[in-house]
Length: 365
Image (tube, rainbow, N blue to C red; front, side, top):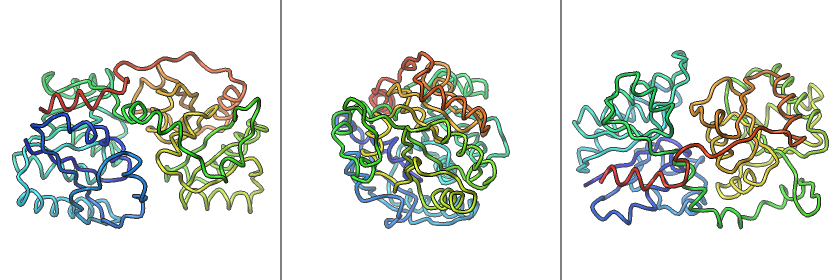
């Protein structure tokens, strides 16, 4: 069986890596890895594929448009050309990008079986472009791989046949399980090590990440959130790996608004293994990333998410995650609890056991 696994951005590779690593145990499956972007995409750091233990993509579609509608059209055109020259029985997509939706549409127009990893995730905010992508992708998919029972319920309520929906667990956990020893041995950059306070040989610190454009754009509210969070954190260092736009915004708040950054340490984005090591050993994580929150639940590290919803309710109901929206007061209160070690009891959500890729491959085979 010829399978094309298609990725549209860096996080997609992290989610499909466990499937690629374990595919060698399934001789009947011939898997090609396709990337919708360019071969020289700067977001794909050189170490990414080595860290994940997978090969670089077999095919780069070369699509690169800022406008989502233009990107959708370009991906559709290029993937149609790919399918014409590469016999494919099943296309596997992941998450909810515009490029993912484009791949899904072309796949079904060509009469090819479509499987969706991380199906059934919803914000229930139809004004979000990704929400539209999710509805289209799930609606077209022949196989829906979900991470938890809440995602199953959503897919079923929207009319997906029970026979099409498989609760396989959260595939991000496979990486943490498969690479546990490598992650534990990953050496942090000396700059990061220098910021960490150690007490009785163990570092105590918080990790902060910021990527959502809406959060970065609302500078006044971001100032209030950061100033209260930093004040409550006190002497506990906050390590903040950041990309350019978030870094420039926060540095500007320090220069022009007097935001106290003496214990808020902005560092360059870390590689996959280094970042996983940093978050696994943190006293707490404050993030706007659902993926980071999911991994925090697996590692049983307290986590605050700067959002009013999560695509995976399990992280809140069972795991270590707490939602504070974009409310500075709620963030400050949760950070205070985190620093004091006063956190809720948690457990591992059902099937978040690091064996999701095996389930997916067995179903595809």
